[in-house]
Structures are given as C-alpha cells and as structure tokens.
Amino acid sequence: MIELKNVTKSYLTRAGREYIFKELSFVIPSGKNVALIGRNGSGKSTLMRLLGGIDVPDSGKISCDGTISWPVGLSGGFQGSLTGKENVKFVSRIYGAEGKRMQEVLRFVEDFAEIGPYFDRPVNTYSSGMRGRLAFGLSLAFDFDYYLVDEAMSVGDRRFKKKATTAFRERVGRANLILVTHGMTQVRTLCDTVLLLRNGEITQFDDVEEGIAAYEAD
Amino acid sequence: MIKRQSFKIFQAVVFSLVLREVRGRFSKNRLGAFWFVFEPLAHIAVLMTIYTVIKGRIIPGMDVAEFLATGIVPFLLFKNISLKGMEAVSANQGLFAYRQIKPFDCIVARAIVEFSMMTCVYVLLLFILKMWGGAEISIAHPLEWIAMMVCGIALSFGLGLIFCVIGEAMPEIKTFIRLLFLPLYFLSGIIIPIWHLQPSILKWMTWNPFLHIIDSLRAAVFEYYPENLFIIPNYAIAVSLVTLFLGVALYRARRLRLVAL
Image 1 (cartoon, rainbow over the protein chains, first blue to last red):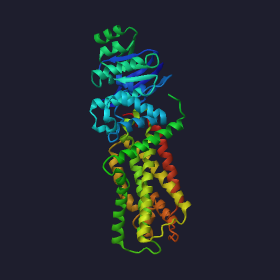
Image 2 (image 1 turned 180 degrees about the vertical axis):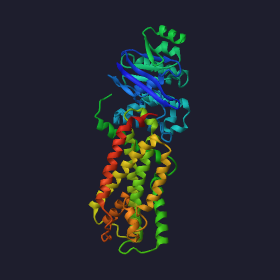
Image 3 (image 1 turned 180 degrees about the horizontal axis):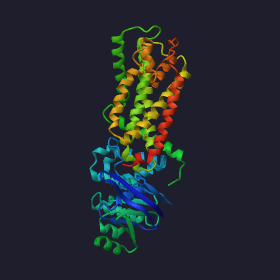
Image 4 (image 1 turned 90 degrees about the vertical axis):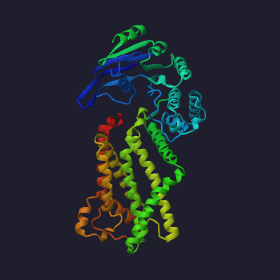
C-alpha cells in the first residue's frame, strides 16, 4: 500500500508557480497491478518521480509499506565510459548485493538483456535499444515490492517486449506493477486497476475497460 | 531485499561511487591509470621548475623545490576538493534516481578520490626529490602536520558543500568561484615565502585561512622554519569548523532541492 497524504507539488516556471498537485490524498491499492494513465502534462511523470523518491513534494507525505524500485528502464544512471558489466556491479553494490549475490545479478542481467559481447563493452557504444535492455534487466534482477515502469516497456523489439511482459507476469503475487503508459494494449494485458489522472486529481477504476473508456472520452 | 543500517548503506554507496569515479577516469583514455597520477604530477613539476629557475633564490635552511612541493600539493588538494565537490552533484544528477545515493555521498566520494590521488602524487614527488636532489624529506613534526591537513580538508570540504548548494541555486556563479581560486593561489603564500612580504600587506593576507594552513604545514615539515607572528593555526581551525558547520547546515536545508533534476 502506498499512501499519499495531502501532497502538494509545484514547479517554478517563468510565468509563476505552477501547481501539479494540490493537497492530493490517495491510497494506491496493494496486491494489484496499477496503470497510471492521463493526458500529456496531467502529472503522470511527476507522480512517478514522487513515488520513486527522485523528487520530493513541497508539503505532505508519501508512505509505503514495501520497497519501491527506481523507474524501470532508467538508463540515465549509466556511466558511458564503463562497461555494461561494471555499471551493473555499481548498482549491485549500492543495493547491498555483494559476492555471490552480485554474481547472480550479473548472470541474470546478462541472460535477460541478451546483448552478447556488448555486456563487456563501454555503454556509450550501445544502441538505445541495448541500453534499454540492460536497464530493464537490471531492474528485474532485484526483488522489489513495487516496480515503477515509465513507458519503459516500449524499448526493444517485439521479442524483447514479450519477454518483459512475461517477466512481470511471473511476478504477480510477489510484486506489483505501477505502469505509466499511453499504450492501452499494455494496460489491458498487465494491469487490473486503472488510475486516471485529470487536473491534479486521481480517479480509481477497478474495471480496466471503464477506466480506458473514461480516458478516451477525456 | 534485506534491510540495512543507514551507515552500512552510506558505506556501500561511497565505496561504489569511489570505484566508479576512479574506473571512469581510468577508462577515459589509453593509459588512463597513468595519467590519473601523472597529470597533476606534471602540472606541479612544471610549476616547480618555473619557480625554482626564475626565483633561483636560496631559502636558507631548506630546499626550494621541497619548499614549493610542501605548499603546492596540499593547496591543489584543497582546491580540488572544493571545486570537484561543487561539481559533484551536477555531474552525478542521473544517479539520484537510485534512492540510496544522496548528493552528500557524491561529495564525500570525490573528496576521497582527490585525497588518494594527491597522496600518490605527493609520495612520488618526494621520492623524486630525494633520489635526484638528495633533499631531506622527513616531516619534522608529523602530528602537527596531520592536524593541519585535517583542518585544511575540513575547510575545503565545507567550502565544497557551500559551493554545491550555491551553485545549484545560481549556476552562473560557479565560473566566478572557479576564477576565485586563481588569486587565492598567490594569496596563500605558496610560491613566495611569507617573510619576504611587507608586514603591511601580510596583515591583510592573514584573513585568508589557507595562508595559515599552508604555512603551518611547512612549519611542521621543516625543522628550522622561521616562525611568523602573523600565523595563528587556531584561526584556521576556527574558520574550518565554522565553514564545515555552515556547509553541513546549508546542505541540510537544501538537500531535497539538490536531488531534483
């Protein structure tokens, strides 16, 4: 369960202060794969960043009973001159995966990303698809209670997408997904609850089709 | 996922950041590991050659090259800790998506990297001076020397924290801060022995805590270093503590702003 209590978030723009959320209180249900949908600029990414701890609310509190992943598929944290393997080791160390556990992580990521010899080459020689694959595999190597996925399912070719979807399906029951996307097929295949963001307000739809309909009517 | 103590996390994060920083520099170009030490070494060697040849003046009781080395290396260390610390947050912005990594860790990691690098440089430099010039390289008062080094590192770390917070609020000011270190070079008595200066000028220069630190460091290295009434080590220690406190307080107040991309 992730609880938002009176969360206010604003950004300072040239035209003055722009409020994304004002006194927003909401509970993201546990045990469910959640899709966050809404139009561009409705605050999906901001909410994602708040949940991921990359950004902090101006006031209010966000509390959670489990571990939340970093945004899955994030490749901005990779150091270009280091190899994929070294980057994976870096993240493992931060998450306390040393020794044998680190070897497991390395093997998992290498298998999952399927980038072959590129795993031992500098990340700045990668194509964007390969970066995405590596980042994706890295997030799945750790067991989180909540996975934040921000449009990351769109990396890679069809085969990889299928693999990613299966990987998440396998985790149902152990972990939950919070998915930000514009692709309704993904919402239908992966999620069982829809949260629709409109003008800084969240509406919950327990019926996926109903939520999608509301989003499309918006 | 196992729950860890905050200090354990801090340790793990700093360790991995140090590794990443050094690995990154090593793999930047061919012979990266060599340049890592040789670059500052060459910089210092050139400076020392210029000043030894141009000045050529003999400082009684001590070797000119060693006199310069004992000032330039610590000063460059202090400068690097401050300036690299200032850039630590903007250079590692992408990493804050991993919630364990805090800006403070990045600044600490950079200070450790700079310290290790400069230690290598200093040892190599003294080794060369000893082998070639036959200089007497032992430190006469090691405890005082270590105390002053700690004081200087604390001061520059505090400055790094302050610059980091200011630089986030006003990025334009970073260039100005970088430029400030150039005159500081001359105002810290690194090249000119302070007893060559007029007391009327020296009186104003003593506002600069680095002058006290560098001169106290030298007084600790050389057995018969001319004592100067203007040099008060306690002043430098007081300034360091205040700066460090200010830095930590500013960081604490603005830490959440630093993380935001």
